[in-house]
Image 1 (cartoon, helix red, strand yellow):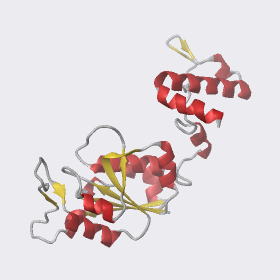
Image 2 (cartoon, one colour):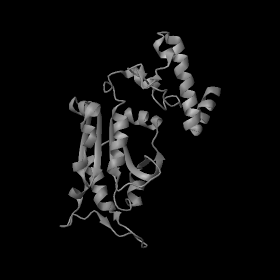
Image 3 (tube, rainbow, N blue to C red):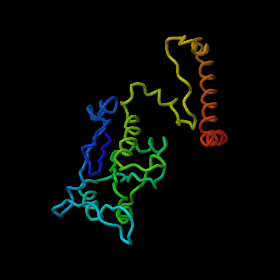
Image 4 (cartoon, rainbow, N blue to C red):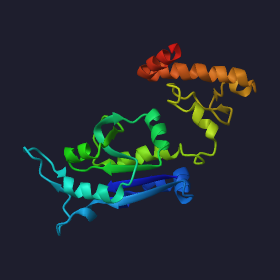
Length: 230
């Protein structure tokens, strides 16, 4: 079972949408454990202050290393510590698969202008970004990352085989999908999908995946072509 510790000043935001649908069922069935820990509980002053002004001047506030350090010491026992940060390495499917094999993750959700750099150095914290944009806090990013990770845990998805054809699994985007009715407002389901010829269907889907990736994600298509050479 994957144990997840989330350090945040807004523990009420968890489990959020992770408490619904497949991830919610996985949480109920103890396929993963989610602990939302309030960083303010580790502040020693009467105001429960967790931030202070940046040394050297500048806008915003920085999360204090003594408070965050105590929160980490009290709750992190093993495994990786991740800080959701816009300067982190981009989250991709390869990283998601990697994280889904861990037994424990501790995730720090920053606010304000970030956290003191000394905490990152002291605990060898891994920084991960979900995109090149700024959010009001790391909680939203943590929820997105955990949704991607939890769905890959054993027994969470009803059809494990469906993972193999998902976008990014082999550097290709997913092929177009269709269902009934066969004729919708004059638009027909491609005949090959109604043929019952599984080999032809697989060839068609592979071609459509290549076309979609080349058109929509030329950067990913380049990686795909390189992978075929190796």
